[in-house]
Image (cartoon, rainbow, N blue to C red; front, side, top):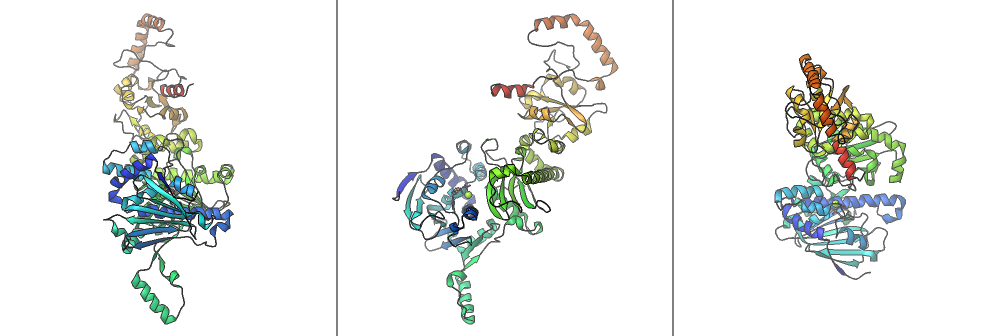
Length: 574
Ligand code: ADP
Ligand code: MG
């Protein structure tokens, strides 16, 4: 099929375009970062495919991204000699949004510019951000390895449809031409663009080039004349603007925080700053470099099963794959970044990653690195740790079940609500709790419920509150799963106060014990009657020291399933 075709954007794209143009207006220069980022991805992909098929390079092995501006025509174009797109790929990738949960994401946008720009940035606007500054966008692209006639011309005004046709393109790769809107002509100014490249794209591993400014070219022409060098004009007219070196290969001391933050944005498409990062090289038997980030916000798809997770994998600086999941456990799925392994084969596949024992070693190392980073954050920057906990705490709570070896380390990172402050905010660590335990208290008390409110007003707390004994208030969905796997901390067992016989001996006076015994005797007949009446519903009826104000409460047996677990299993049809 070669003729021109006009097609509609997917509904989600139309919605996104409309919202984006309004809410990102104050960050409009990000389009350049997004397009350079895509060009860099395209070069990465071709370099990878060319490992097995060198002929795809068509003799052009020097990857570069070239930016041209034309201040008379008011255009800016971004070209790369990367993988390129076929006609089908152009229709699919430049007409739809593949991300799962997009519709749900869009429904969360409010129309409030400030809030929406935050959300949209997190979603990763990518290619469509071109339409913030352009009223017409053209894409010329040819997939590497395809004949020149397989070139594609895609064009849209961002108003709901695009046209696509075939054109002959001698070179593989992609060129994107933005026809700037009235009022956005500044983006055809070479100096402005240079500044933006240095600001946003310095870390891109490929050269980002621009034509030299006229004055510089004239100087050089004079020099060339003087030395009578016959350098070709085309070669000398371009200069590299960015650092053009993979950021993680640079020494830590040389990389500025701002550069780390920009690189984070490149990897994640999230445009808030990361909370923390860890950059390091491990030498020895397994040699690898990693740069791992803790985001400041949960992505919109954190709880989607199919959501992408994992690190970008490189082998000796050659990009191998996105979302390599094997390098971190599931409970650290919020971590983003890059791992560059020196000893893996370049042709390693996902299947091979699963079986390679070398990966386990690296995974163990990276897991420790993240846990150490979090511990340091908790210690040195509690404010940031609180943000982390709010966003990702319930994911980290999966840790003790998944990662036995690091159970104690993860346990130290956990934070809970407790009866001490009686606030929903989870800021009590197990170490804090243990430090405040009564001298003869042996266990760490907690209660679980559906909601914080229910946990807080649980009748099981009455007597403990009266005695000033702190109880952890657990109401996250994963909490029972957590307490099933985290049975103790610092030698003290965790104790559900709604379960079995509560050993209050330690905190009860002799007098109280006597009172309870005599009460038990006194009310033996009543207990018998209640037991009879509830015969089919409960196992036992007892006089209790648990309650202070309520007349009665339900208690779980020592080995019964917790209410949350029961609900989860019921929901799963068990
Ligand atoms: P993302 O980069 O997150 O995938 P984008 O909206 O930025 O989302 O890009 C959408 C898709 O369009 C890319 O995944 C890629 O398949 C394709 N694409 C965009 N720019 C290029 C390019 N310069 N070369 C090849 N493919 C591209
Ligand atoms: Mg992109």
